[in-house]
Length: 292
Image (cartoon, rainbow, N blue to C red; front, side, top):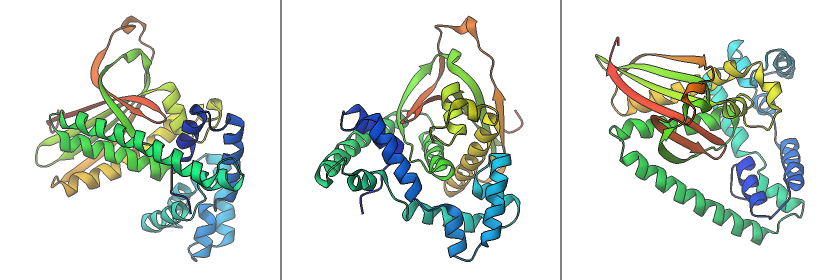
């Protein structure tokens, strides 16, 4: 089996290197999607859901535009633990892009391995840069927990191994269209607020699960889907903070649509610019006394 890689973004790397055309990539991704088993099939195989229940959930998805697992949780058909097991099985047993490219004869095994090695080298360099940037932050352990929680949520929400590739200070606020605050009461009297500032294209891509859906198809449910993502991120962050010895007493996620700020054109504000392999967003992390 070929090593696991992030399909959309490893594929983008191959296109940028001239190794395959966008048409070839689209063809390979379609084959990959058709080959991968849906989470409902894994649930039936393990006796967690009946086929009739799977069909009802799929029908409901067309009306609500929510992930299969989220609906199963809403209806009480699966526990969070069962859903996590199914998502893990879907990841482990899924067909990856490299396998499809080799099966279609687009890349030879040797060429695929060479390109994947180069892709990982570039990713490793980026991760080292992020680590160095985090070391310069005042509360680097909390920053690491936030970045790790975001990356885990990308996998859980969209089955995409997005990574934060770089962190730089200052951004132009005119870019932002959605703000998401994840606020947690920690310890006896502290509050941690992680503010995420999303450009419109990143918010729409996130709402579509980074699947390449047409932006207009995601626009109606954009804020709801973004909130779903950050609720997942919130759970990962709470767990990470508790492992660090912080008691998380309460938490909330607040999503706000931002209006354009033309008077700020060309100006920058103090925050981290977090760049992933699907786009960038602004990030501010603040600790205050609880109640403020």
